[in-house]
Length: 317
Ligand SMILES: [Zn+2]
Image 1 (cartoon, rainbow, N blue to C red):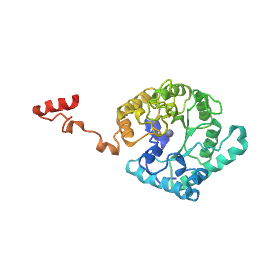
Image 2 (tube, helix red, strand yellow):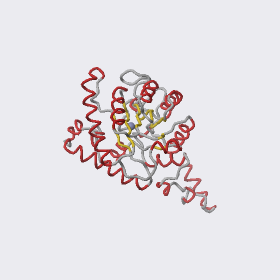
Image 3 (cartoon, helix red, strand yellow):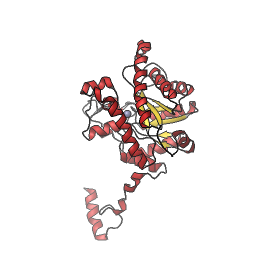
């Protein structure tokens, strides 16, 4: 366990909203550190690491990821979650055999994470309730608080056919401390589902949408199309991005319907997380560099009258 004197996830949730910050894979790809396509394997899956010739680096990468996260978390009294996710190995039609494979992967990853020090575990982007249940069992065996969130690629059900709301209820009944949804949907199409989950389960609820403009015709960011009809996911999504004010508004809406853990998934970036935190009344280390537009030489309030004409011209261009 992490040697921390700060409060754990459950104590923090009891006191108020906890904020999550995910989506680092998109950010790493944008910065040129990882390859789009194989994606997540850079830190997680042995099988998929083979695709990029790094299967022998699995343990070292997992341990180092937790070490780095702990280093950063200490700067701002943040918690570190061990993370497990959909493995692509689970098959409900061959559940007995594939469950063993999935369980072994989760046990291996979380054993390393626990040894390096984590505060709780997030099992996320679960396509199958069956796979999420395996994750939950492994987390509970380790005696850690469990947050389990589902992907919501399909309109109403998980890939093994459970209504999202019912699936969350089953996870809660099985002992998950926090349930909800992450990834795939932007705030507009995630919040209606989250509202139903909130009114059904009595445990804590999490919402971690992607910061993209999904709508009634495009429930997920995978279904968004560019102006010439091409699939925008995952490399041409920029025209659909929310701005920081819109993500801040999402955070306020989530709070108003009773969401306890409010975060962001693929496409997330630090400026969103800061804007969301501040919308929730928090001051975070990054608030040091929050915008101060009144100091801007052209847009600010302290410009002399003679400059105003120039600014008016500039703005109207
Ligand atoms: Zn995501």
